[in-house]
Length: 64
Image (cartoon, rainbow, N blue to C red; front, side, top):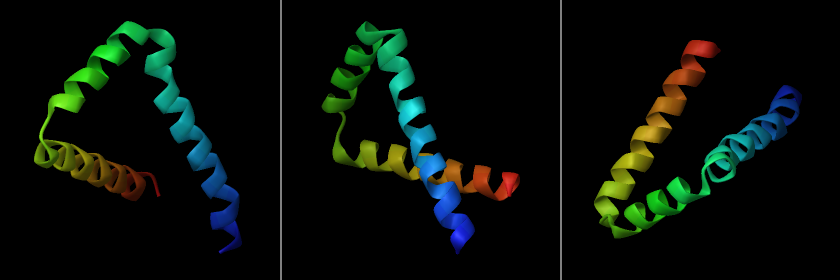
């Protein structure tokens, strides 16, 4: 369990780095993407979220 608390902050930090890349590199495209996502219905956003989580779980399984 101690290993989890050593790795977890690193994982959270990497999420913040990845989330910050697009707004830093291309704020115009990021703003456009956010406007497009705001127009999607809840079901589409949930499906995207589910797909992202499943992709993350598969990546963790393959790496670990």
